[in-house]
Amino acid sequence: MNYTPPIKVHLVCTGVGTINRGIETFARECFDGLHGTEGLNITLFKGAGEEKPDEYRLWNLPRNSKMASCVGKLIKRNGYVVEQLSSFLPLVRQIGKNRPDIIFYSDSNLGFQLYRWRKEIGVPYKLIFSNGGPCNPPFSRTDHVQQVAPFYRDMALQAGESANKHSLVPYGINVPQGPPVYEPAAKVRLRQQLNLPTNRPLILSVGWISSTHKRMDYIVKEIAALPEPRPYLVMLGHMDENSNEIVQLAERYLGKENFTARCVPYEQVQDYYQAADIFVLGSLKEGFGRVYLEALIHGLPCIVHDYPVMQYVLKDQGIFTDLSQSGSLTKTLAELLKQTQSPQIAIARREYVREHFSWQTLTPAYLNMFRNCLKMPVLNCS
Image (cartoon, rainbow, N blue to C red):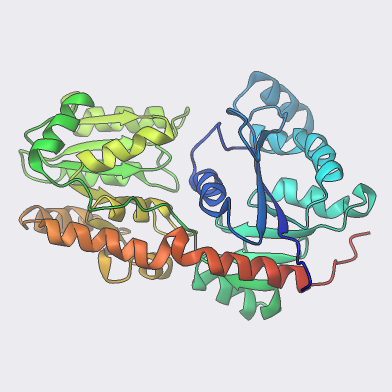
């Protein structure tokens, strides 16, 4: 009987351990979900955090460091690009040592370098770009593309991309066993631990706290238009200089006692989902939206913009409305707050995610994507 060696995959994401955007949380959970799968030898290369079996730190200049900012000014790029470029040579050393079959990545700046210098590196690895950002075609500097939603896969095919180069494989997510926390007493205890109000509905929004993509300013104004007593708003996510205007806006429209804006470690985010009553995201489009799955796992109703990607992820579990219009979220929230949420509905939301997006469900699709990529010829990148 012939022995087939496992596919050796290097999963690279320098933001893991530093920041918790969608691609970083995906990389973290992708490694955890696929690690130990028969026929697969996967290694995670991250930018920070403790080294563990098959999990290594790559030296880099972290995107938020002063050094990255200074170097960025010199090369006229931002700290994020500096982080990617500074990790390139440390990664090349690991590639030469371990000789992976596939490098699986989401950060295009690093991927471009791996494509450009592949001949010089001397290892015939294949490149799979996970397009969760998303980026638009052409995808000329990678061998294969993971499309996480049909909308962007179809866009690539309509632009003339080869169907063999694109695999429709959604983001996977870890789904805990058992039902979500629903008992009112448990929610009260959790809110007390988190220093949140215990006697009001709690609306949660998770994402970059800014007025750009996640449109936290829209959420603030729409909640402010509700009649008093209003729900309490929790905005959770990455905070930077753009977040100050959102905090000031919320103070003006809602009052300091009616909201909080926090950045917490990723492992603590689930406590806020468990404490919340409703999940809202103000973005008008998403590459995928893992936060929707996180909210459903904890049994929360999700109010989202009516957009093809959100429809694909949430299907009949979402509450779709036109969030580009003033008053739309206010009206939807007012109607939802009148409804009684049952444990059965919360359980159904978690089970929907388990059936469609758990790693147990999706692992065969990931293995098939890796196998299909290996069938592709290594492109000439001279």
